[in-house]
Image (cartoon, rainbow, N blue to C red; front, side, top):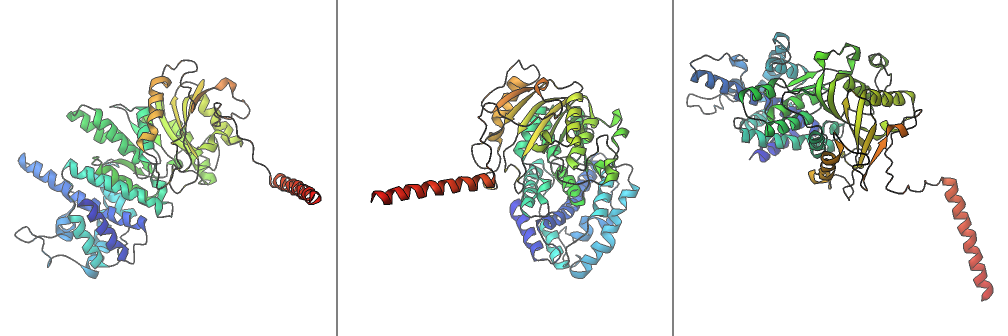
Length: 493
């Protein structure tokens, strides 16, 4: 039922002139689903208060509750189509009354950690793009069919929502930036192994995939006590996101995974000077796949000790500074980070090796990120002690990666198993060496270039590619040899 409902909503949005792509579909679906979820949440809290003989103070005024404007009922508790707004009246209400009312919660909320603030953030940044009030009416009625009350329902909805986020990668317009393959995220989390009571952070959280998977990891392993559940809800997961749509998707994704008021802040992380980061701002665990290829302006670069326009390299400095001493991180980054010869890249590698133990580099195959041909590595490090040796693992799933052959959990099993058995924290000299893995001592690294490139010593180096001129010279030589042979044959005849 859930999957068909999502498909039906997409079909309606496809017919509307205001929704142009998969990105628009999920953006519009998200704000509708959020209000649907909020209605269920408020009703649950009102019911719970009534059982205790208390009165619940609703967040939203009655005129702006889902059950009033979206799905009004008659005296029998049935949907009353005569009371329901539709057509131009519905669009006018949403655009000129509902969104302005909801956006004001950002100003009146007690703190960014409250659901009131999330309401204000979402509706001050998003716009209703559904131009036909008749289409919007159909979307509202379809969304009303989605149940949010049981954990089983939320789990299925979260799975379908994840599928929609994944599909954005096929929609162009940088949709894929919001989606990191979940098997990779799960493997990173298993290696970092977050514990109850630790604070987990992603400063470029996108659709909040790392935070959602970390929630699942901890929830499955923890004792289901009231204190633990409260800690998981309020004091464990933290994120920052710059882009409007990604922020809303991340909030909705975390809500569907069970976090009532996600601690995600809508901000440009890199606008924060790293010199201003204090101990109270630091985290035990950082998991992230920061955007790469972006070019930051000079005023943003001024916030960092090592000046560079490369977005991912600025995020690396932010993450190192944001880790507590003894804190653990797993960061996806372009593999050229390990070998770039510009001054900023060399300085950043030296900084990482001096202040952190970069104990593991996971080399990912091309095609891991669908729609992006960039080769990536995952850096695993702990803050506090310098790096002495690095264990490399070169993932080879034995097939070409792509949309029809995506990364799966089985692909990651050997890496996780090898890491757990031989890599951390007391690996012995030479341990973990297989055909696809090896150890590099930092003392063997060229101090001038600090080149940490993935160079598997167990596989013979391929011959370097020939230059175009060399190829032409070889062709000419082969032509001459062929002509000589043909001449010899003629003379024999």
